[in-house]
Figure 1 (cartoon, rainbow, N blue to C red):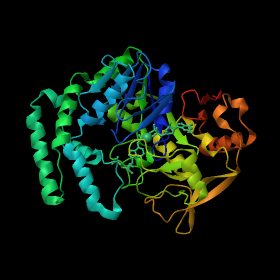
Figure 2: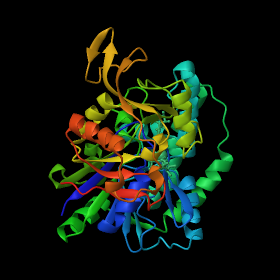
Figure 3: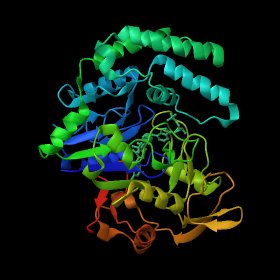
Figure 4: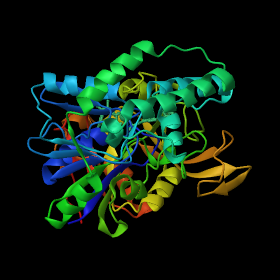
Length: 423
Ligand code: GDP
Ligand code: IMO
Ligand code: MG
């Protein structure tokens, strides 16, 4: 069997959680391979709206195994809250949730370091979610990190040693005031809860599963334009959000990757700082924000909105080897007279069709205009109900990218999902 990978092609919040939940019945295992509680994946079904941060979005389907892979970073406090929220809905995770011993822990002091680093950057700050993601991955690659598997191995000693280092940085380098006492005690409560779960060698578990014919879906977090290597650096997150990240974040060999499902909004959003060539500052931008309820699932911050950026989308498709596309939130543009797609950039007066080395604020988008579909997409259930204008919009994206749009999402609910009958 192969591992299918589902990932965001823009700047995050494309709707990954919703689609993973929709596709889960087709798989045996659902896995997260990178990121941490900077992610907020929203699921809506049976009048329930739920946001997941660390736990894979397959958790609401009966009998599916959900695995938090080695590439993920976990904050025990947020994890405990997530578990409590899901348990309240009557779901018992003790038999369905597995956690890699190699996943790294976000310490309370990592969160403080994140805040201190952002404060020190001043105007050039990243706009981090302040969940401690950057400092935790820095300790991972710096070979100082604390892993889930350490919980029973001189844990307190290792914890204290790392905190001493962090305190030194906070006091001497950042001169940052902080108090972690309260968070620290919640953190150790979280560790207690974590240790009751099935902590496993997930790379072995998943490869054994593949050998036994189990199918796996890998759920990306963030988006390709936030990838630490290929995103709009330095305004990115600290992990590899791209398809290759599923190999390193799960211990899956590249030749085991099957379908690569790339998700994008019919327009674009970004939360946090950094370049965004198609960002709109006018009424259309405001309308996208209001119609799309574009407020962060993790931080509640307003998302910046703009037209679909095909230059960035094609780049993401190339980096990830996307085999099929899923277009989200089409319904948000139901009442637009005109819709635009950016097909090239003007960089220093020169027209280019690729993402330049440095994505700066000076890039000017070149647009192709489309007539709006002016129909209520939210109640559409089959592709043969698509209007001519809507089909023109999809056809253009397929022709430009050379990749089929296999799923169209027309609302936040699980049921508002249309699978197109194309090969
Ligand atoms: P993720 O991080 O990629 O999982 O996406 P988020 O959950 O952060 O953000 C996507 C938001 O859009 C959530 O509030 C979803 O409930 C909502 N959503 C998902 N698909 C659709 C859609 O097709 N139409 C509309 N209107 N909302 C959607
Ligand atoms: P999901 O999985 C949107 C953004 C932050 C910030 C930058 C770095 O829900 O799509 P970090 O906390 O990682 O150091 O922040 O990345 N960011 C996201 N934006 N969706 C996310 O996750 C994000 N995770 C991080 O806003 O600009
Ligand atoms: Mg999100």
